[in-house]
Image (cartoon, rainbow, N blue to C red; front, side, top):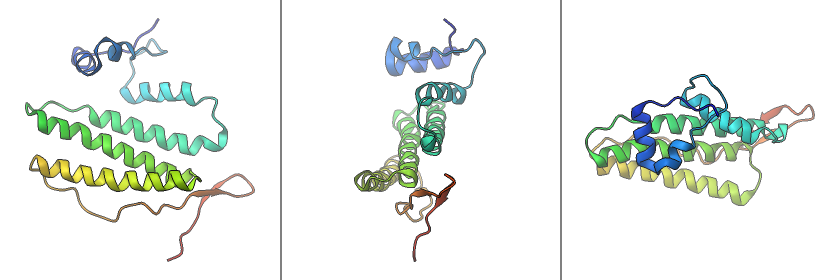
Length: 166
């Protein structure tokens, strides 16, 4: 079976995080070396291949968020466990925010939309707390993007964003 090409550093990181199972899960469906982004996309393409076409925009946003999160979590260790923890957790929390934004754009269930809004707020708060805990400056502040209108479909099945009333 073809495998994902893995550097010694990547193998050590994978095994440190999840033992042999983490390294074993890097099996992929190609003989050629792949980037982490390609690997994640391949996993998602296989899993999401049978999804309805209407769900494609949501799935594409989710895959993009997961890919960015995983790549950004691949840090160069600083020698300080606390700083490294924050460096890995901030992209993890940002990934949750990005996935929540995707469900706000494409989801319809009011309970899930409310949950996504809460995820955005709490993850932003936790990012700020982590930065402060290790003496890092806070990220630039801005409005919390919790009022994202869902995308609606018109007759030709093209997605259009709903405009929000001021």
